[in-house]
Image (tube, rainbow, N blue to C red):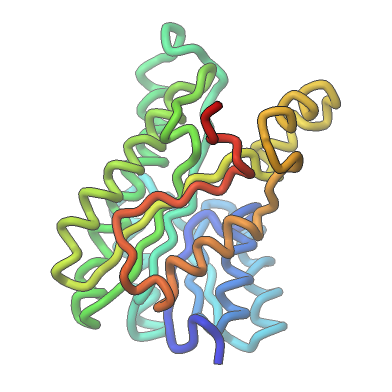
Length: 253
């Protein structure tokens, strides 16, 4: 028996990077997976690989998380194929352009906020009715260390992840009486495309490593294992929490 046996999970941003790793791990642990992303071909490839290894346990759904109508379609697809929704992993996100706040346009600000913050709200709104039918559920919002400490140069990203952090806590209060748990995960420097675009420069990589007491970058599986724990019944008495995964970077001197 896997840790997610008989569970159905929606995982956004699952075509590559962090989301793809989460989708594979959840399937390995027994979940039925509704994998979503805008990148249809890459997403289907991930789902095909999962199904070859674990049987017909996953489906791919094209999904713009910033569009409420897409969320309605995703939840309907989950119900039609698997009959329920136990878990939501709000993983999809974008960094936006590298701009200081005084240089950002309202269009760029809204683009980042709509994907990273509003997308999470739509997800919560549309899975909750299905979770209430089950009398329980688990929602995991993938935020960032930037959502706690802020981040210069991509301020809209940090603001959107801060919004995710506080949305998580508000939702946990609202949904606790329905036995629906809501938690957030806050990765630091993880070796996904978001970071590796910079770490090919040895000087930049060494600068990043100097901020991490453990002395190495995280791997997407490190975040996926945290999401797995929070999605599973092992965390049945945990809600409204923020789990930092940063190799000690946030430890104050």
